[in-house]
Image 1: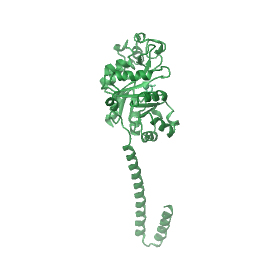
Image 2: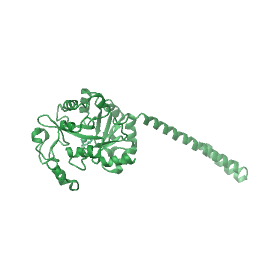
Image 3: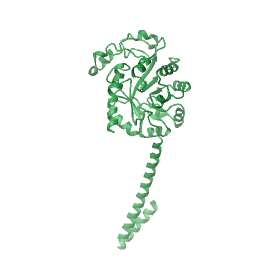
Image 4: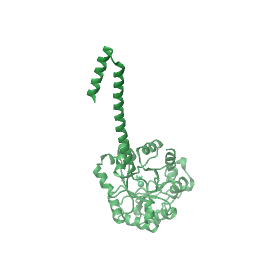
Length: 324
Ligand code: G3P
Ligand code: CA
């Protein structure tokens, strides 16, 4: 190509010096440029067609949404995390797609919604969750600290808010709601996965229709816990969470392995690029990054091709989705 252009340019120079046929040669040059840009157009089109073809094979949210809104610890930007206040806000007031629930287990074997292994950050108590019976845990106030730390959203109703059990959550929101449940610290709580399945089963959330529609997703940073879930019930959709910095260091082989047990991945959102999201989608994953609280990040991630995200402000993401 380079050679033929060189030949053309020197021919133009010679011919214009001699004053012969300049218009014809100019036409030839412009025709040749036309041919080049035509072939460039064709290759761009082929790449577009390929990427459209790949996109047609991408997996979508089981809920049927293009972008799913996962209320992180409930609408925890506005109300105390993992209380009925933050869940009511996300589910009833905002209409987020999923209530996200982190699980810990009490001394007497009850699954409760709590992010940390200790109660210190979010309640007026101290110590490890597994050192409390459910009755003792229920005495704690899981609302007042939120009021102190978030005066702009403080509400006296939150004072004395109780830590809910998984059983109570499923009872309250029922079989039409969607739950995105994380097995936290599964190594600390042997039997957590069995108990989770028993509780889901008790609330009719493990039947084929329910699972197909995505009413339950189980997520974990622990591959061991997810493999155990897979082994206990291979129908439950699983999401492998990826801590900050994990994704950029993973190989395609790692992704292929995860694909054998998980329907998707939940990467820390600052690790995502257009390229790695495309690759994760082409590998066959749902991609649900956490925890995205800024509108500009939500918009950018949607453009990358994620399937939804975890956020403390589900109303903001719903707005972004509606506008896009
Ligand atoms: O589960 C997704 C996201 O919540 C993971 O981070 O620490 O908030 O549970 P974390
Ligand atoms: Ca979580």
